[in-house]
Length: 274
Image 1 (spheres, rainbow, N blue to C red):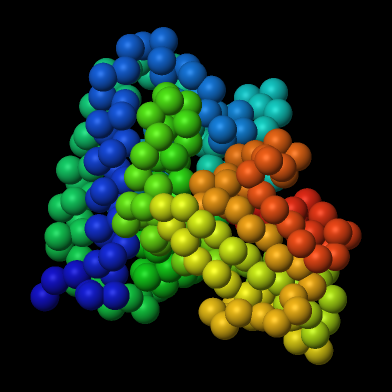
Image 2: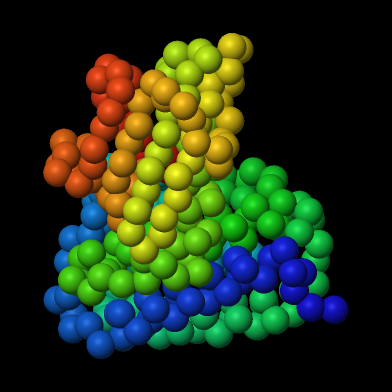
């Protein structure tokens, strides 16, 4: 038995991103670990700590017993408190400690994936104790690690891998979140269509249709006379969707057509991830 074919793309995406992260941070001087990243409230050290923590969770390691400080302004809900635990417990770790732990976790996770024989539908423990499928866990994990690779690249001035296996997974994950956000959060009109025209290293043209009941669906077919069209590059799409930049900061990198109130509502609520 070996890794199920459905899971292989997620394992490959994780491997590519985690090895890229290791290459990025391996040569860093101590002070460079304190550089600010686009991820709110987190430094390079914090992002790497989070990635290590995510992989420890995938390994089933016990969570750290740790009390968070009260002055973490970026921590405002239970999900963020859950994620911050693995980060704050490593805030005083040195560069060698960080790289050593990262390398050890990579070795353990590679071994875990080589020996993984479970079905994609197997139920596993997710964040905050939620029960999710193994496929969902691996897909979300590959997505998260790629996004944090991009956080590190932005902080260190080392752009790249915008078309990597992790980027392909990220495209599918983010597109999967769009219908609910457009229909429910941005409150697009019923019986309307909103088009996203994304270019760059990853290109796609997708339509979100909102039916008469107000439900959103994702379609590959182009829409005639859409209520709104948003044209932007892939990197800007990711930065907006992951809450790394405000819409007003990238107005020169996107073009909107159609109902101005609707496009404003979409952009205002475009952060798809927590």
